[in-house]
Length: 370
Image (cartoon, rainbow, N blue to C red; front, side, top):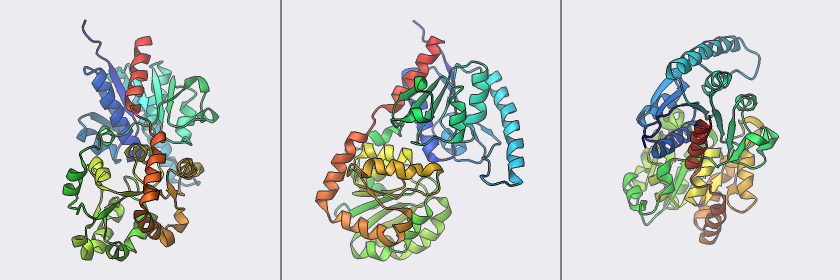
């Protein structure tokens, strides 16, 4: 029997926390239904316009940005962009004729999901965080299904639409066995030394970067290697700071594409507490120090971090304390094998496996029902 050819739009992006789950969902759909045609819709100038084509998918960009939280003239421009994006979203849906539309968060997901729901096309939101953004709160009243990673999301969404699926992560991260040697080779590291992976998110994290940059000598003195993802804004400064330390295995990277190799090669992770970062670390099961960003709605990164640290599955360092304590705590943890082992064991139950496949199944089921 010939397989039905479906057409699906996946919209959203802005950061790795939106883009990589979107690509993971697309890959899972193609695995089950390889004749499916997938079109991404993102925001011009954001990272999805680069990362999605690299993953082998077509993407169309909307000229859209977010509203400023304070009253400002820029919001008039943002409103005009929104109206223009709604018109373009209508045109995209008319031409592509999707069987379903998926929103993963980010500016671009709003216009596409709004138009699709009006046309009664099956719609689904994938909400990564413990506290959803305003766009998804508004859209939740219109869409058909909402996939979430945390319990208790009925505080924000209609309970009848909620499916607890966990967050999709990059497929290669779920399979780290046998990758340590490749990781050490890729990052030019000495396997006999301890290694710390530092990830502040795809765009970097200023507090973490400054805390690391000010204490490179301490890592050298303790014979500790660094895989340091700085994000593009801080990369040049980190490069200059690391010049005297490169021969000791201290190396910055603007962005790490082979995160599976980085995770496999490392002993301890320092990270922000974004939803996707936590989902990946739970699967990786490495000791982690979380430094939640204070610059997010409802302080949801701290809530994400507390969900682990309250169960002795992670160490939490407040952003305000990072410059004073982060490096000392990292070095102390690397020297404490018992605590490292406990953290690894305690984080394992928080891992959600096969999230992308579960979401793909929900999407395809919706189309078949329709």
